[in-house]
Structure formats: structure tokens, C-alpha cells
Image (cartoon, rainbow, N blue to C red; front, side, top):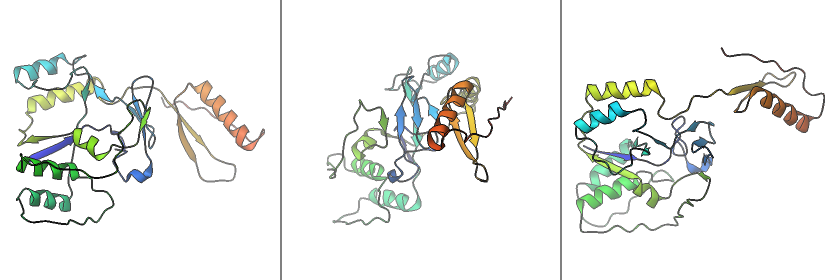
Length: 244
């Protein structure tokens, strides 16, 4: 069975901006420290992983297994996400591989056709001498932009790969990857953050947010924000608690 994967930047926590429609306007911001931050859940994560730093045991194992034939840089290895098709998409993908004759007009029940790169790939693999023309108003992403809220169809095709009849992962490799994850998170950096919770007097709704700064800076920011929005004398009390 042919399995597809994509390397488009994706939040590992909520899977935006591909979890739902792009109309949600969720975006990923490129930070000055080299990480990416999701606007939907505020998760900060690495865009790639360094497989060489602190991972010599894993690299040695892959080298002995002749598994290092990769076009990617192991200092900055991209994350690949498996593409899982729903039943309708599976049926269309299987249908196109049966080489149907004639002219076909395909209607679609959703506004976005997300599995089109897979459909086109399966068609091209079946008809190696033919070409596919993609017609649409596609805007290339500005590489100098400090945020991204999605990829165009041509970009998604460029970031999609497939593996023909992938071999099952050995138990030894699974154990080494598990040990790697236990030493250091692959996606995230551990850091202290301040959880801010506040409630208006007489209101049952509790407002919750995350402040990435120090405790003192967070308190000052809260004071300035509340005074700006509601005026002096609005703050009743500020309590500090340690999670430890």
C-alpha cells in the first residue's frame, strides 16, 4: 500500500492551520529564536529536528541498517505528517488508479479538495508520459514573511512524499526512538510560563491566558491592561500561586 506524508509546517498541538478550514485564519508565526508559534493555541515548537545533536546512538543504528539514504539534512530534518484519507477520498484514489477511460466531471461535497495532491500523484504514477495542468488562482508564499496561514496547492504538492509498501518499524528502532523522546522533546523546549486567570467581580466566567514573561512583568502587564481598559481602581486583588 502506498502511504503519503507531508512536511508543511503544522502545529503539533492542534494541527493548525490544517485541522479545519483555512477560513479560521489560524496562522503560524516565525519567532526570532527560530521556533514557530501557533496563533490558535499559542504552542511554540521547533520547525525541524537536529538528528545529529545528542542522537548519535540512533544515527549509528540507522547507518548499520542502511537507512540513511535521505535527501534531507540531518542537522535540520523536517517533520513529516501522515496523510489519512476519509472513505470518499479513498474511493476516488482507488478509482483513479484503475485507469478509467473517458471524460469525467467530478463534483465534491466540500469547499476544499484537500487530497488533490494524492489524486494527482496516483494519476501521474499511472501515466508517466502524461502531464497534469493545475488551473487556479494560487499565490506563492512570501519566504520573507514572518507568518504563514496555509500553503497553495503547488506548494503542498512539493511538500508531499510517498512510500511504496513501507516496511514495518522494528521493535529495536521503536525503543531507540522512545529513549530519544524521553531525553528531550522533539517538538518543544521546556520553559516556565505564567498562567493568568482573572474574573470580573460578580461574573462567573473565568478568563484564562498564558504570559511568557517573568512573574513581575506579567503582573505589570495585567495592571496596565486593566487600567487602560477599565480605569484605575478596577483591580480588587492579585494572588500568586506556585504550581510546584
